[in-house]
Image (tube, rainbow, N blue to C red; front, side):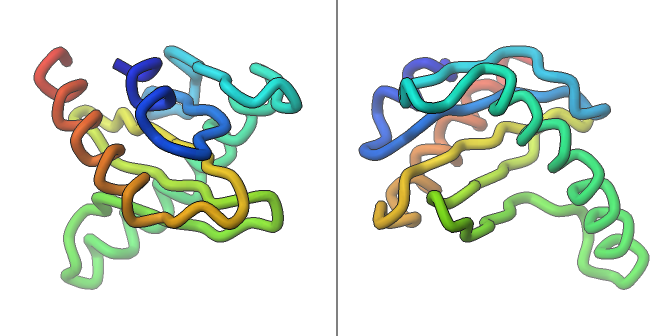
Length: 116
């Protein structure tokens, strides 16, 4: 499913499926300039941010995080939550519209959630 997501999204550089501790479960790379290690690090580093933001949002009445979008100098990071603390991070290249990628990520995570 992760491979299908990366193939479907125009400009996708890679994706990582992580557990609640930020450990990579699966990694898919499309951009040859991006290593598997780099994608795993992105996924792991987002775990701390994701957990802190989720705790804060819940404490202040907003509920759990569902989606996060971060603009970076080399593209956009999109993160979407899954049951049991899992999440998927999709990296798309610079200048690629985020909305179509976010819709594709939403669809993919719905499919992945049914398999968990």
